[in-house]
Length: 114
Image 1 (tube, rainbow, N blue to C red):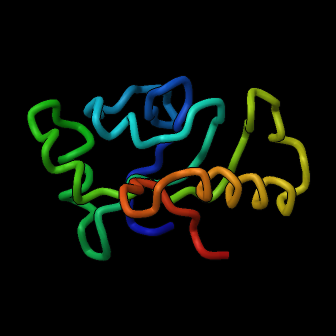
Image 2 (tube, rainbow, N blue to C red; image 1 turned 135 degrees about the vertical axis):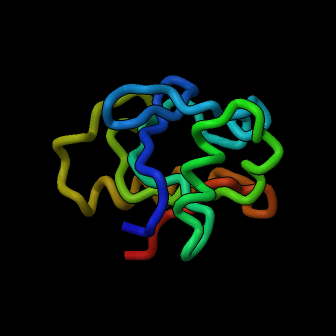
């Protein structure tokens, strides 16, 4: 755990494990990859847990999402194919492929170093 807010990226939305949708701004969603389901944490940095929770739960703090990074630690679907039950090494390679497709200068997601 990185001290962030656990979130699943699915169908163009960030959801909690309880399937509640986070108040994510459209500009942040556009930075996320399509056609995959990812598991990770919305992370605002070490010691910033309370701030991160406040940002993700408030619809009035959209500008502050610029401080967040989606730290990906698992891939459940890639290209529409379910890979949830594949070996972890296979899912890790999928994470690397997905993250490589995103412009790293504009990236709002990163693979958690393994």
